[in-house]
Image (tube, rainbow over all chains, first blue to last red; front, side):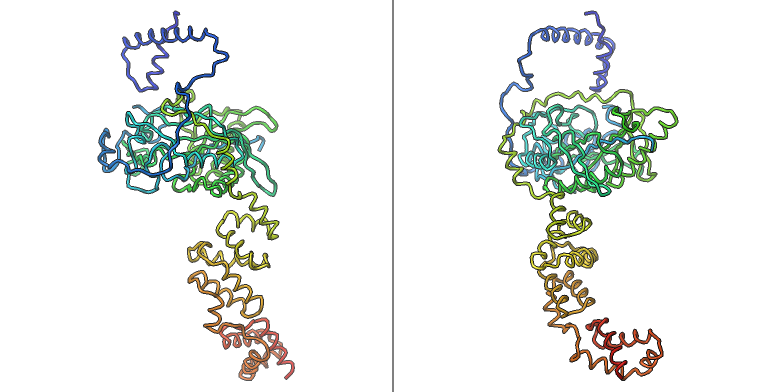
Amino acid sequence: MAVDFKKEVEYVARLARLTLNPEEKERMAGQLSDILDTARRIQELDTESVEPTSHVIDLPALLREDLTTPSLTLNRVLQNAPQRQKDFFRVPSIAGRIPEEVEG
Amino acid sequence: MKYEVVIGLEIHLELKTRSKLFCGCSTIFGKEPNTNCCPVCLGLPGSLPVFNRRAIELAVTAAVALNSSVQLKSRFDRKNYFYPDLPKAYQVSQYDQPLARGGYLRVELDGSSRNVKLERIHLEEEAGKLVHSGESIMGSDYSLVDYNRAGIPLLEIVTSPDITSGREARVLLEELRSVLLYSGASDCRMEEGSLRCDANISLRPPGSEMLGTKTEVKNMNSFRAVELALNYEAGRQEEILAAGGAIAQETCHWDEEKKETIPLRSKEGSSDYRYFPEPDLLPLVLEEAFIKEISAALPELPAARRERFKKQYNLHSSEAILFTVNRSLGDFFEAAAGKYSDYNNLAKWVQGDLLYYLRESGKTAEEIDPQKIVELLIMLDQGQINRPVAKDLLNEMVLKGTSPQKMVRDKGLERISGDEKLLPIIEKVIDENSDAVENYRQGKDKAIAFLVGRVMALTRGRADPGEVNKMIKEIISRR
């Protein structure tokens, strides 16, 4: 397949907040192309009578009772915070921006 | 308006559980920031979610109460987006296999009622709360995050594009809130953010089947704001269309100060949330019996209660609505009506003086013993006390829980009437106020009011002014 997947790679990278250099983009476009080729081959199989699989374990979810358990201490909660201000996680301002515009 | 307005609502409400949807952290409101958090709701690597049974029960309860068809098998998916209130960078939600499909809600507006259709109901997790720094939201260069709300079970209800005005949207929300409160699924406290609403709105030529380009309206923080914002947005779209323009598909924010919707310029293309099945959760499978059990346990819902109040107690529509919206007041009325059969008189006292005194004192009807208002009304009906005394007794009853019968006995508040008790007082007043009597004889009607006032003062308000008036006139004419 001679389709160039660079645009797709850039789009996915933006959604995932990844910065890729031109070399990486080139390489990943090729890899993406290979992955899609494989997917295309799988699509040739007749799956008419097969239910789509979302889980390999064929069991229903378990339910727990509505009981509270102790939470972490504040220091443990904030241990991995990129920045801490008083009892909060401090993050770059997102005010007035919608999710798609927020840079990671 | 030359156009037909088409509105669909997306309503989010927090379910009333003790613990979060996937972990045991408490859902209690107003705790110190970041103190109700654990590895699961913080999205720490290696943690695994486990469903809260109560959340599922409440979601099914809400779905059944809204006539929605609960699916025996539903699935959870990851909705991926970056926003700091979302610790995992995805929200666990339901995409193409929601908990319940369809449904409707009966809405009464301007004397007629109709069913507004629902599209779907699904379960998802709440996000955390962002606190913006500085005075102005726009001016801040950082935000603070509190993850206490993250992971609280959230129900999303999506209506069909089936609503025709801002007012109807508001009435629908009020009814929805009522149904969910009665069913016990949610507290629906808008001020605590446990009920929120976004809307999609578009215009089209009347009778057209096609939907016009829609805008999404967000940030409406009260039912009133929903009505105002949607009416404003309908007007804004109409102006654009009438001038030959086209509506841009965009998101608008309702500005509560300016009372207008402000479009947010966004990048082209719709959101790409890249939904995929949540690998950490197995499909949710419900037993037929589980759904039936919840259906059977559903309490009487608002529409049924209003109808019953109208029929059983012969109440006006407005009274039935009040006694449904104000549930404790209606329950109080009903408890008292079991022992007092003049329902209309009872309804008048409950929605009038009682409600007034309750509001004055900041109490609810639950705190008042219904037996006591029955005592009070019986004494009034039998002429033992007069109306002003009855009102005072009611107020005392609300404030201190005093028994009206006991108060009447202890303080001697019985009505003073008849030849034996009232007549001597009236004769005394007439004897002592010959000037006023003379004035009355000469046609000055005000003089009689003075005499009645004197009698009321001497009886400390316990006589019936009508009776006093009548007796004074009789005595003067006989003399």
